[in-house]
Amino acid sequence: MSVLKEKIDPKNLEKLNALGNAKLNAFVADGIELLNPDKVIVITDSKEDLAMIREMAKNGGGETPLATPGHTYHFDGPKDQGRDTFSTRYLLPKDMDLGESLNSIDRQKGLDEVRGYLKDTMVGRTMLVCFWCLCPTGSDFAISCAQITDSPYVVHSESILYRPGYEQFKKLSENDMFFRFMHSEGETDENGCSVQWEKRRVYIDLTRNMVYSVNTQYAGNTVGLKKLALRLAIQKASGEGWLAEHMFIMGAKGPGGRTTYFTGAFPSACGKTSTAMLPGQTIIGDDIAYLRKRDGVMYTANVEQGIFGIIGDVNPDDDPVIFEALQTPGEVIFGNVLIKDGKPYWDGMGSDLPKSGVNFQGEWTPDKKDSDGNVVPPSHKNARYTIRLDALANLDPEANNPQGVPVGGVIYGGRDSDTQVPVEQAFDWAEGIIAKGASIESETTAATLGKAGVRKFCIMANQDFVSIPLGQYIQNNLDFAAGVKNPPAIFSTNYFLKDENNKFLNGKLDKMIWLLWAELRVNGDVDAIKTPTGWIPKHEDLAPLFKEKLGKDYTKEDYIKQFTIRVPELLAKYDRVEAIYREKVADTPQLVYDTFANIRKRLKDLQAKKGDTVSPLDL
Ligand code: SPV
Ligand code: MN
Image 1: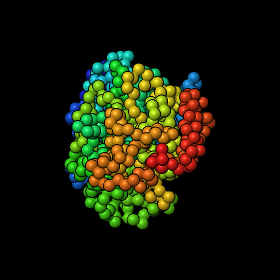
Image 2 (image 1 turned 180 degrees about the vertical axis):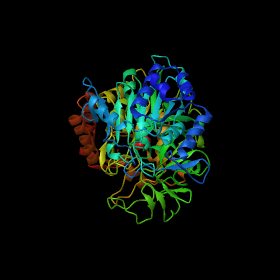
Image 3 (image 1 turned 90 degrees about the vertical axis):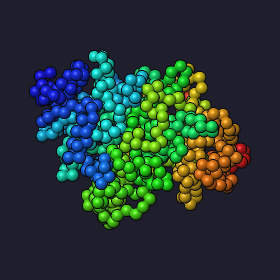
Image 4 (image 1 turned 90 degrees about the horizontal axis):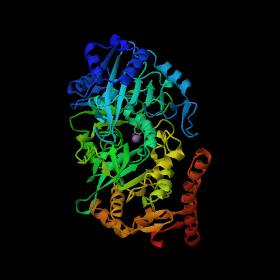
């Protein structure tokens, strides 16, 4: 209390005291002692406090106003444009073993390092203390969170992306847990960007439900409730029998006005948001879902209330709902786009870009090169927008239901140019978890730092965030169907299949047809064709959907090209994936190996009968 009293003025101290939480006070006092701010501001759920944050953000706090009222832009530094998976580590106590696939560091060593980097970073600055809630407040999904940061941009982003949590915090009792996040952007340059990116660290203390983040601004490294909280949530869920997943939630519209809810896990930048935003359907969330069981039914709720989405290729044809929302006055933060005369521009927006402007590298012209000699694009590939979901015309009416919504189907996607068919239903829950979710491979994208286009294994599209041994995580997913009367159907999708000339075999909106076919399957409305790896659609069920929804004639030739079973590629895929499990995941459940063996046998039987490539019409 003496530390708090010394640094916090009476008005702000009163706000903290109203929460009456000794653990919170200890967290804030630790922050004050370590970070050494000049001033501390405590932020409540009030309109005034949120307006103050918006003002602070616009006045040197990481954002600049644009011409459209409510719109601002934010730049991260040139070397701070994505999640830093290398410098994100679990602090490992001596008695914890997470397996070799998870990035970790000895707890004490990591604490010394990250707290060393955080020390005195807020001298001359203001420390912001704010409160949010993961999932709808007052539900069994809800988790309270406290965030300390010196970035008004981070607080503003959180106020768009998460439900307010100050009032909810008052209801916590002394023993209730909450997640804690401590962030400082560290030293900044004249543009307000973190300079010491080589000392960027995101360290996760699972023993304290706390995450440290320093010398970074990119939201995926700093906005506590997003991927930092997901890592804490996965561990908590594992102990309590529920799931925390890197999934969208959306309502797919079937015949007669029926809504079937789907969750879907896709690696970053593989069509996840655009699936959740498909025209004619309704969105609940685009990034993180919690799943719980009640009375033999799986329910899911959106952890967030906003979208931090990739802006590249958002245009009136491919993403009409988002495009419209991004033109409308209201709170939107544009990140790492090109700015010219108070307007944001990005690649693939469907109109010409100006020939000059300002972007994350400074003054920009088309011939601009970065320090490594590479041409600088107008907007970064991982440029993003931050917007509240209620700004969208297609928000599902159940989006804030504290009970969540029942899960009808689960989709696992990836970026795969040559192996999997566009959509396939797994034979059952266990095979879906293992052969679809736990076998995702995806060609890398700009959402994480590093080289793009490399095929990377990514369990449930959640691997970057898994905070328990990977085998245990798969087992938890397998076990989750226990006691569920009618487990959701599991599907794989692949929007990135290419022909021999390296041309995509599908149009961007074809994903709507795969989704609506899955909706029909969940409800038992259509038959399907059996392959060695699951059930694929019949041409006769897809053609009317293409005609009705997209006005396209879906030819048998296209169907055959897209749904041909590529046996050698599939065998190679399961060989690759199995090798990773054998080498890297010591606690892999035996069922994983048995399932791969069964799939391989079915593939080889088909190969012996029909050859390497098998038309769906020959099955
Ligand atoms: C992702 O990369 O999966 C995102 C954006 O949703 S972030 O994790 O915040 O970087
Ligand atoms: Mn994500």
